[in-house]
Image (cartoon, rainbow, N blue to C red):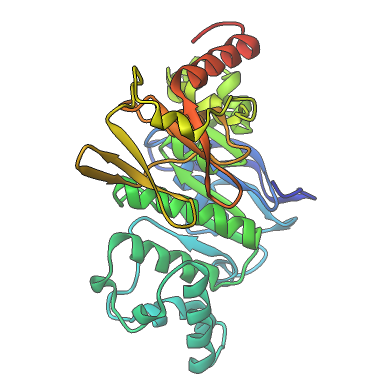
Length: 359
């Protein structure tokens, strides 16, 4: 996790009222520079309104918002918006413009030539993992995941230290969503931007956020802290309910699996009495796991347990049907087997030792 030297964004007594309701009430919140801060909460709790007040898509009724110490009302709203990236649901791409032209929108508005804007767009396509062959396509010709990557690339084109994301992955299927989440983590490690990410999904907030702000109805912050703090000690009944009954599993994300015993790969050859008897591990020429063979059917893919992984990752790596998972070394080669009994026992010990009860 990157070190934080200051706060990138500060809400100071911010309230947003509409004619018959209060969307956000007296919000005081300091968002650290260089981290991902997730705004999470039920529908109508003010998280999106709060995000949009940062770039003045919504104007606050009272209070002030500081961007790197400067009031965000100190310059024109259009200039403020161009100075930071913004990603919305379903990408919000202009349908009549190509992928490259969509990405180049902000550089062009900032005075870049057409050639420079296109060059920047192609560079950003590389950054977000988009094939340059897609540059001339139009949004209607893209998959949902591709369109969201274009939206992220367009936001990065602002070349701002701040990136705002309003439920950007909510409209894509779960597999694509996981890929996009992993891509965002990679981008953050590479670029070290300050990211404010709105989601209604606590699992997504835990997976992505270095800090989480849990919003409650009425536009108030119920709790702000690290994912581990919120999962370990919810501030009140609302947070405990929102986090959910399975928060014990989520907390295993922060528990190390380094002490788990690894069984020899040769155990797979000892079929007698083993729960994985019908299964065979497939590896490629480099010794990397490629999937499983069940009788005459091959099942590719699956989660692997990497060095330094968490207990949650260990649980995910053990398919229920096999009761055994595969561990890999730093080069991705199969290095041993994880037994479900060992993983479950370690998870139970972790819960009891850290929280005092078996959840």
